[in-house]
Image 1 (cartoon, rainbow, N blue to C red):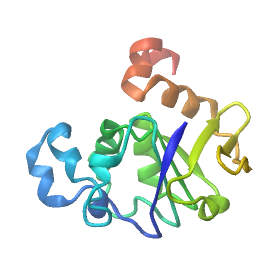
Image 2: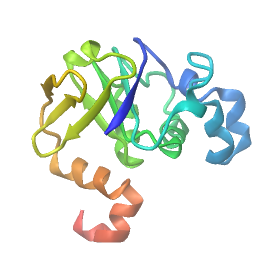
Image 3: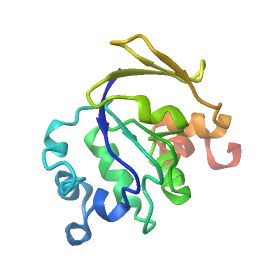
Length: 162
């Protein structure tokens, strides 16, 4: 179960991970600055298992993998958006963050408590008991996310079994 942090449309990777902090090099030094221009207390408020919900084109802009790795470092396990930029979607999978694209994402309120049913392809709002379905993800994507990302997946299964 995770708490929702709600964002709008076209949140680009420069807003997620501001460029000036990239020179810090290490994720633990960059992470406190994630989304700070949109929600200054985000890095201090987010907890392991929390979920980002957004509108269209979340993660657009540069192919800044650090945007996803810093979110994962802070504990974000899932991003639900009307649409995710394609490279950002891939970076989510590589870093073990579940990417869900669904038109109903706009219906989810900031602060809602959600559970994700991967086998049922469902998202449930624990307060309202509302349930939304999402299209099944490829089994490889689910396996990589469940392992915590591509590197843990390869360590567990071996690259020849992908």
